[in-house]
Image 1 (cartoon, one colour):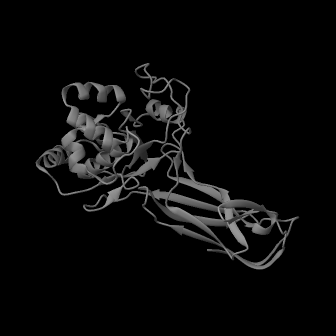
Image 2 (cartoon, one colour):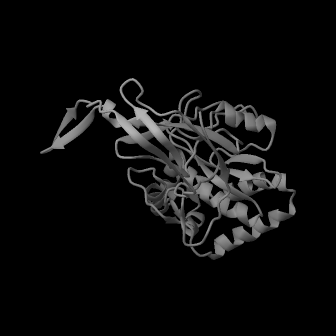
Image 3 (cartoon, helix red, strand yellow):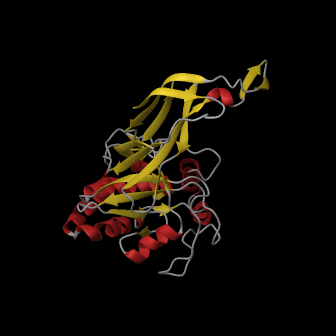
Length: 310
């Protein structure tokens, strides 16, 4: 919590001094019975097929640590395909029932199922970015790796031409065009280095050239795991949110307390919305910015490193 003991706000000074927050992302643990990636995938008990994948992932422990992220990606994508629309069209020709399951459970129709069991994803062999990311981190843990989920806003990532294959990074989007909200993984090595891994595009940032592709495509992850609340009622906290660049372990956000009375509000009565003009009522007293960390709702956990008042 940041406390302003003597805060004076009015129309000339409607916000508090800036509060800078430095956070560090932390690996999470995949646990049976829990849901991940915004309740997209439920980790259920191992089936025979999942168990076989686990055995193969455990064998990857014998590889040098820096080689394991790519090895896990190969294992995953040998068993689960990305459910592109053209892939689904081919499946529907040979197995309409499977195609219907894929459309329902991966979001390719208007309503996607939540809490899809991991065992079903492995059994069916299809998923989209959030499903592939959960399955990847599950197998990565079996190979002695740890990491967390990364998520972007819509339009943040831009499609590029891969420098290694000269093909589009994202199959269904034109070069230079924005990409829909996207999920991927970052793996933390024992030396503290974070390696971005995108199971959907089969890109692993384990070399300077491949890491640069993540940066060129603007893989900026939203820093879920921290919540900013303002007090008292006359004030609210607002500011620059937290985003992580590819491979970045720390980032910072900047926040202020704003005087609510300097902004218009809305009054709803009998189904009608009415704009209420600002009252411009000044505020004098204590102001607080509460900083709450540790939320794993989206699969990212953050540690508060530093708080500074500018």
